[in-house]
Length: 231
Image 1: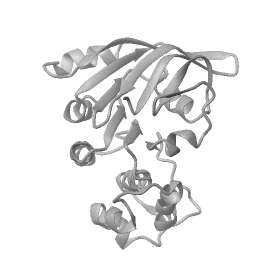
Image 2: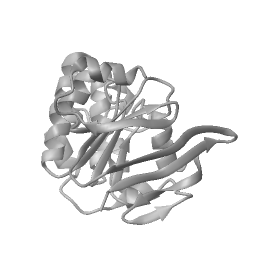
Image 3: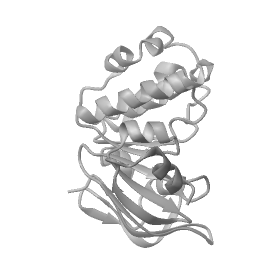
Image 4: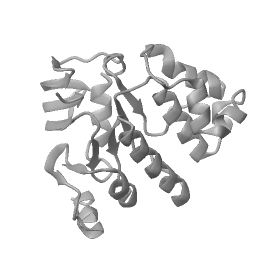
């Protein structure tokens, strides 16, 4: 049974229809990428899952149950944690307070403050500092750590490489693969070809709010992937 599926979803903001019949699925332990250039609706997939965009047709399937009007908390309760584009660090909270927000779902699992600090020692060293006092790469660590505090079955990452140096992107690629190897499925919404190639095993291409292609990444060249993103 998929951890997450979109079944012919049309999604809108008010009268503006952004997604048109979008269908995809992510199974337990998978590493799936959603490719596409800016403005094709990738972030709207996340916003639909969070209940920010409205479903006009089709449904989201979570744990085998179909939802046509998902509430903002439904994904978290279903074991899905989301790292938003822009990271979503709350400026008036410390690093540790930001992390503890992720634990509010109260799902059992191995991820707690100690485990996150072991994974990202800099967060432990600066735990009482403001979250926005970190560098861009460290803020991404904080956003990922907060998501892991929810002990998810599926980690959804919206443009996690945005604004980061190549060395940090390489570290993220290693981390995402390790998380998947340990049983956390990864859904990577991304344009960075190198990160996609190192992390994902399967892909969907989104163009003008529609999934236009899908398949396995094995054997695909960098140029072929680049061509998909520019569709």
